[in-house]
Length: 140
Image (cartoon, rainbow, N blue to C red; front, side, top):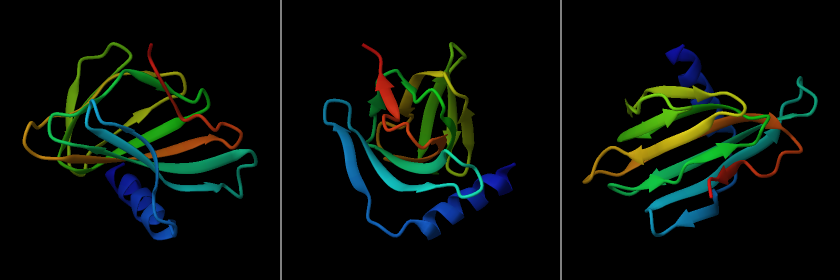
């Protein structure tokens, strides 16, 4: 399974030709999110692959959120350590090279840099309906 994640990350990084466009930055929390790649999947009509780079400053976090209802996500830690909790499960810390998945409709309650001194980066790989343009909805 780790080989599959590494392959997906490698393919995504190789095929991404455009510089990342900043989608959202929350100065209050120290988390920045940018779209890294977007393209249709030729053999899956109506589906797209989108990658999002999440950068966490030391001690930073993202508010609780959900993703597009069609989204299956593989989140791969590129740098540092990230705490994640989904659907009421206990928070777990993922280190560089580790990953987790999120199914359509999951509620991501904790998403945070586990370190108060080192930055962290996550590459989120989305398989999503091509028509879904809002990838993340924050809880109110």
